[in-house]
Length: 156
Image 1 (cartoon, helix red, strand yellow):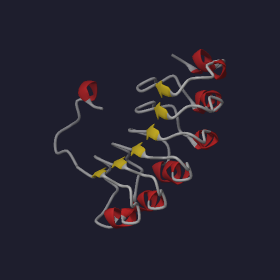
Image 2 (spheres, rainbow, N blue to C red):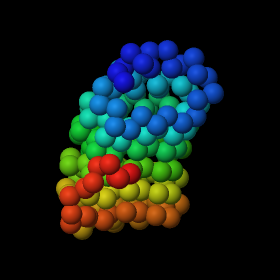
Image 3 (cartoon, one colour):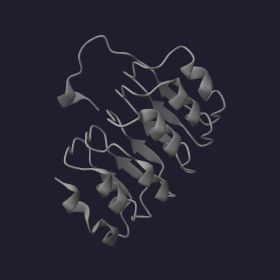
């Protein structure tokens, strides 16, 4: 699928969830269109390798769950954007090579954050967990690092 498939997605006025993982033909243009779906509460863009900018997600005031695993853009900038979503409860940034402690620090401002998955993000250090201590609602966090190569068919 390409961006063209989502040009009129705003007509789906009751759309609450969009699962678009592994769709390599999608770019920020798709996010621009999907961000017109104001009732969207969950979006899965994991391993959409051509999406390099997620700023349009900020136009989704009800967004609670975001999966940007394998994000090919600057994951620290993505983290900054996501941390500004007022309803964010679940975030996945698995296997993001560009995610560093600076990105995790942004999530420390997310009052409603309940679950966070930063597994296989090799740019994180011992400092990363301490940035989440102010997330009073946080129930689950994943910083695991796998020793074996990932089986992409079963990942996620």
